[in-house]
Length: 334
Image (cartoon, rainbow, N blue to C red; front, side, top):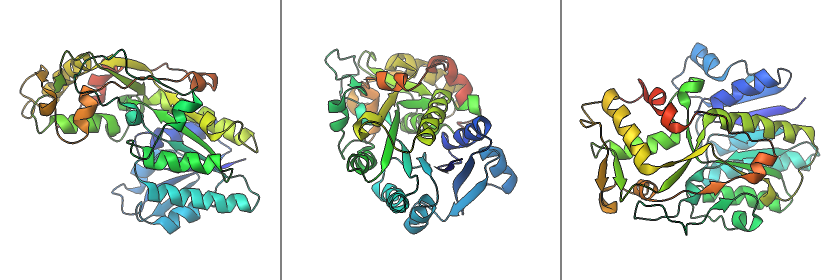
């Protein structure tokens, strides 16, 4: 039976993943990596991660030696906790490479994010010329670079897999939603970015006609696919194909930004009318759509497709974000 370590085990994806792995495979040894200075009681932690076999505590993501040491003690490491920065991922890779040198199973399943694939348009309109990133295209995956949103960690994992030093797999969900369906502890990165951008504005913006398309994926679809990928990793002593052929892009559905902004504005007004006095979104110029990188997300297209993921067992069954959104935000904003 394989030993599994889940980084980010108390998070939006990691917590339901821990529970799903133990439900699907009670005999597997699943360890949950958590921060020692977390605010959860033992009972809250047990509720969050389920009946995992072991809690692995570290001080924080800068405890690289502890991360490396923990990684070296498990057959399969699932990184659901950090896709933005390079150093923790380097520690995970180093630990698994040490394990592989000892002749033991050592595999990494890394969770990335669809922010890699926005087209940085500023019109807010659908662009028929925008690139559609396809996980069946090795050339597309080889274009991933360090300056992308998750590029620092993605390139490290791809290079480790391509060099033969480690069996790697990357699962790249688009904007993840659906927390209400899994009793998630928070809203997740996607909602937090979009709502965090809207709060100081006091309204939910959209740019231009708002026809730009955003790729989204339900967290249940993400978790189910991660269980499938983990099963595939556990069933084989060595990975098949190249590292670039083990990069899976997943989405449940696309949504137009104005449609999303309309539903979001209504929900935010009901949840927090003081911050969001209007239940309607506001059409703005790109320069007024927010601060930093998030306004690029608001105005841009994110177009992906994942035929390789589907062949590997991915099935998009979750509710559409426009149907799910109100439940996700209920009691989670003010």
